Length: 166
Ligand code: GUN
Image 1: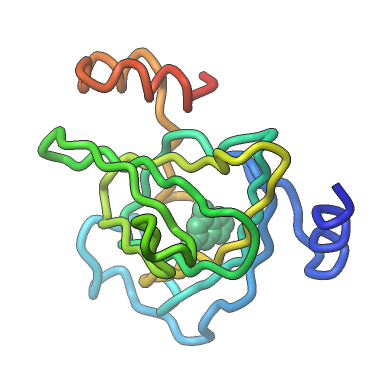
Image 2 (image 1 turned 180 degrees about the vertical axis):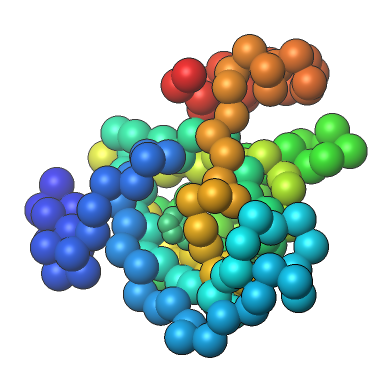
């Protein structure tokens, strides 16, 4: 699709290990020392944000991070964000602009939840922003193992199988 090529070139997006393309837009200069954080392995920037582009050909696999992540809708079709909460409950959120269809322009995925996302409409794309504080670090990022996640949440076997690769 032309729009994918346009956005990848325009914003210099690169492949993200979880699927899709991204580019870091903001990383605060100031640093929170590890001593001021709970559960982090080192110092972190105050805050970071990225553009994240996903297409219907791909998906963002189940992963989790140590920060709350705030999603902002920019353009394209809605993004389904599948969240498994620590208590075992599961919600499919929709990030988009069709409010009467249950979509919301901003979504917060709480720290520690397993989440995956996909563009369900065929031949479509979705451009969103993702902001985290403390700032993102791949040290805080964990890609789910399909078997281990199913073992922990067997009731969500179907969606986990669909949205994991390893
Ligand atoms: N920077 C690199 N990857 C990510 C991500 O998945 N989320 C956020 N918020 N920032 C990132």
